[in-house]
Amino acid sequence: VAHRLSTIRHADNIVVFQKGVVVEQGKHDDLVLKPGGAYLELVSKQMIGPSAAGDAAGDAAGGDHSGAAEAASGHEADSSAGAKGKEGDAKGVDEGAKGAKAQKGSGYVSRAFAMNKPELPWAVLGLMGSLGAGALFPVLAILLVEMLAAYFLCAKTTVKPFVSNLAFPNTSWINSNSTIVSFFDSVGKCSAESGGINCVWTAEGKWESGGDYCYNAPSFCVKFWPPTGSTKVYKESGMCFGSMETTVRDYSLGFLGLGVGAFVSLFFQHYSFARMGEFLTRRLREKTFEAILRQDIGFFDMTDNSVGSLTTKLAKDATYVEGAVGTTLGLLVQNLTIMGISLVIAFIRGWILTLLCLSTFPVLVVAQMFQIQFIAGAGGASKKVYERAGSIATESIAAIRTVASFAAEDKVEMLFLGALKSDGKAVTKTALGAGMGQGFSLFTMFFLYYCGFAGGAYLMDHNGYTFKDVIQVFFSITFMGMGAGQAAALVPDIGKAKPAMNSIFTLIDRVRRPPGHLEAAM
Image (cartoon, one colour):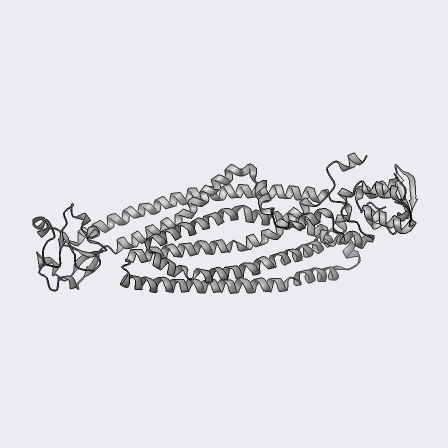
């Protein structure tokens, strides 16, 4: 008893039963010539191919068989692939698959996003969370720089090059064993804490203004050192350290605010995109399973469409697609935000040093592209290999009684291991590309450190850069590089998603039997 007619096409005698009564019998080539025959109707319903029926009939009769051909061609739109024999059924290519391959990859991403349209409000919320999370690190860079500068606000020195040739007022305390000083890049910043009175001791040995007040002032600025700024000298060390403590405490509150912002932003980012990804995965699996159920019988005769391959595709491909347009999308937006804001801050604080550091980025991009090509290129080959291995495992376990009765355990195991070993070259290629790309990226990162520190020292000496300028640019470029690195870490997920999208949507777009086709045929 055969339910899949493609398996009995070459039988010597085919007997057709209808409600327990034999209505037709004969060879396939003869039965398909009977217009309105029961066998021809079964052939058309199972779509073993109108061309197959016509070709077989033509080979048998060599004459006019338009009635049979027309009867079969009524289902041509639902046919999978016309072929001759079992092997022809397995190797045929249907029109729907050809159309899908013609647009391979050219709109699959937009279709995946369109399937998430009901979750659009969550997408907006997740996008806002990703932008907020991306802004955290550039703000963190600013806070770190200000915090470091605050800790360097008070310096204890016993070397006084700025008092060697000048007689300061009240020099009994300034000429003691140690003096607390603060360094500023301008006189205005130095004297900002003097109650509006500019207490600056000039190179000419006199007060710039407010002499009576400044003569007994607890602190004053020296205008002539360093050359591009000034030094504030404190009469009592507690004044400077008290100011430093207040500054550090204020910036510490900024870290607390960052923590709150990180909690809110990351919560909405991950929850929203995870929700989107979950619904997308479910819809993709529903449509894939529906497409599988509505394929013609000849579709399942193809080697690539074995039970194991289809179940593997149903289980994994939707997850791979979700990895590219779900949570991965949120992380990508977050990292792009980090890169954009950090770059703007770096150019504002020191465009020369920023350009110097960015000169290493083309090399870093080349390394990342090199890594992407290897991973994405090997992803498709690995996917096919694992589908083939999964097919062998699924079918052997499903037919374990048959395997055991023929004592074929060793043979099945060898087939499974052989399928896995065939992926060895792809794995080696992927590992080689990933290793070389990652190593080259690290080399570029350390070269960036060299450019940042060495170039910063040169610019402080020749272009008037301050310590805060150099550190701000360096931190900003570092966080930008971190964002680029995290974005590159998403490459494997994106590389896996591309062949998965092609596989899923090619199957969904494949011409298949419409819903209710049996009722329509009856």
